[in-house]
Image (cartoon, rainbow, N blue to C red; front, top):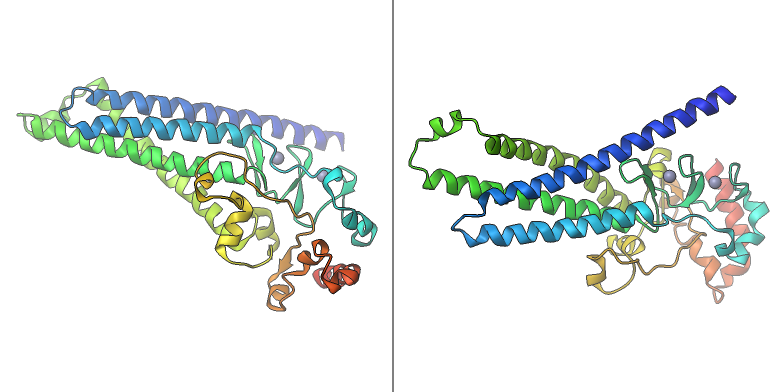
Length: 305
Ligand SMILES: [Zn+2]
Ligand SMILES: [Zn+2]
């Protein structure tokens, strides 16, 4: 048992250092990428200088989003935030985290790396050295978006810069390509890395968009479970906050109320139309609220089947 714990600990430390190294490498590459845009400083085209400002702007945004993803609370389940009604059904629902020894909301998951229960835990991101959960998913998605926009801007700068260089050069293309210089090697290296990161970041971003659309975390997708099914806009607001649209673009704290009563459903239960069950707990005017316990029990037994 102790051996198993030690192996787990060593794995965790290895992943932590690998994640930090990858993150440091990413930032070094980004700064290097920005430096290579200075090769076109003497360009006659003003668009190149404008694009360099845009790339710098996206870099500041992605850096802020990355810091917020890594250092903000992903949604640790705090017992003081658990509604009294839920505490009452605590024993009945009987879903306790064995590690934290406390009540665990149906949409929470215990993260071994963080050693905490995280509400709507999507995954533990080694790259960010933090969990991605209900409270920091917005920062993570914005980080991916600004990273992608930054890379696309870098690619545009190099494409325009290289085209201008060939057009102004009196020499033929082949002899130019045959002469190797440090600058050319750096541009080639950055272009290759840009293509690699476009594929890597697009894949991560697509996974996040799908998760928001389906109201399903990565962990829930493995279990074949979903959150309540509603429109994309409503799902989006659960991650990005219910506020003016321009806040969605900034790494500001999303305005939202965590609903620990939210349930997870298998596909069969969704078809039966029980997706609004969790609303009952907060709606005192709803007569069904009186029968809340029965609803919880009924749903719990259905989930167990
Ligand atoms: Zn836990
Ligand atoms: Zn974690």
